[in-house]
Length: 389
Image 1 (tube, one colour):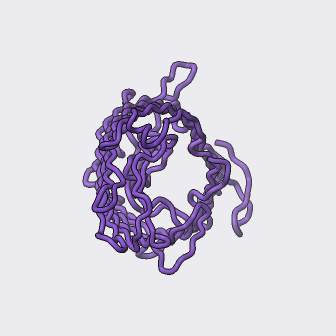
Image 2 (tube, helix red, strand yellow):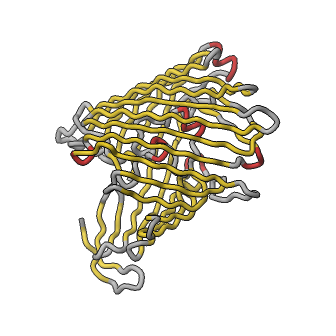
Image 3 (cartoon, helix red, strand yellow):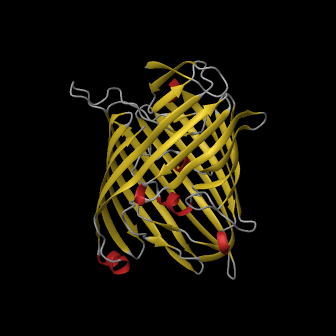
């Protein structure tokens, strides 16, 4: 750490500090003001092979590479209680918002208020940063159902000595720059989590949670679709546009960490009010597990009920440090068939190896076998080179 002199707000310039805390952080002497600069780069490569049935339906599957995420952000705190964050993603060649909000901490009875583009509070895997996910891509149900980011206002807090969290908000369906218009098209989403078991600073824990969301689709149309857990693959399941004025999501989540072993799973049910037809029900679930060969454990954030950054026992170095090695497996299932809608039933089995060179750098290797019911099988090998700070 090195010290420097700078001023914040109306206070006189004084001694502050700049330090590396998994990102470049500036902090005033009293800690009331903080500014952090960070970002992430994820370069993916994928090799895809589909059988005759898959290629008859979707065409020849092509290998490829992409920059999955290229993000920069500035976040901070002013006068101890005012929060802000502005994060842009440049993947694909144009800028899009990926969290742009203002916040206020310590609001009596409400905790932290946020206004702006942010994640709707739904689902453990969705809220855990892609920097810290077990696999390169989130499970099928996230691709199909997760509300993701929209512009709105939310409140969140902890209870029972941080053994419980809750969050709730009202949001508008908005585009990639946080803009959206419409008459009465709002989403209401809430999540509650608990830690019935928590010891050894998170080395041993049991996490449970439930979330619900009610949304009014833009233009009275909604669709659910999913790729086979590879962003460079086409969508294997797709309902197409469904005329609907209301969608209700209900999700259940759970996770167990016992030292280097962790298990996590979720189930989501989507109830769709179909205009001009019978109501629809779709669902998905996954179970995933990992084991740290080198003895580390998945880090958990009690303040927000999600997983965080893995810190190797020793960083990879020319002096003999090996970094951390994680082995992972997952089964994922998605059912988008109901009544007159045949979006497909898709299952996937995945295996992964994650090498954490240090807390901010990792290499991921994934294998995915995806099977569409009555629609064929595909095999996917993919790798990611990642740095985040």
